Figure (spheres, rainbow, N blue to C red):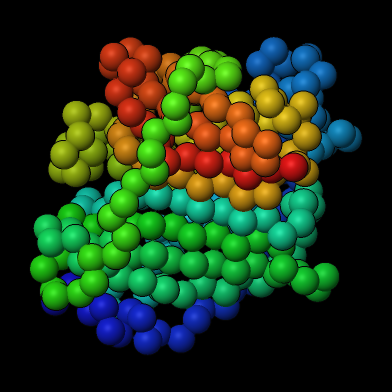
Length: 285
């Protein structure tokens, strides 16, 4: 069987040294749409190295940009067709603000394999620390079509109750037609986001935007709109990828602010507000 849950769960943690520079951070910020208007002081915090603030979602690409999805597929016991793989969810916990440059050790392992019947979901946890201690913990949920039915635990199935009432803020964020081509330079070269033939094999009419690109755009919107642009106020950020984004579409970001957390829903404006990110929570101070 392509997924051997027992083998994947028993596999030894994989430790990898990672490193990043200001250039990597600047490229990531440009990849999620920072820099418009180019001379706006609020944008220069993301695009000018002399005053650089690191958006916490950079953690998902830091150190050669290997995303949790690809790492999960390299674990013993996992042998699947990439065209059947989708990123289902992402959760990031920050232990302290991310430095603009650094070296660290990333330790990753599969912590759960859920049997959804017609599909399987792998949960890949990566813990990153430097010489001063823990930096962040990242969990990627990887959906593999056609690989369920092995008799395993279904895992959690409940979803959050949608926020009540009108959002406190609603912001629209356009994406570029070449957004995926730019974002992939951060390290995620999955052909689903660039190759039309591969995208059609995977069941899409054309290449789609990386879920983690939408993830970054959304966090930047929350930080800039509700947290005074202060990236250090973010404590954690989780979401479920509910639908695709086609490069060039506009994202509608709805925000419901609480005392220490903001709930978010993201939709595609041009497709009648089709859901893109759901069950999304940014915890902050």
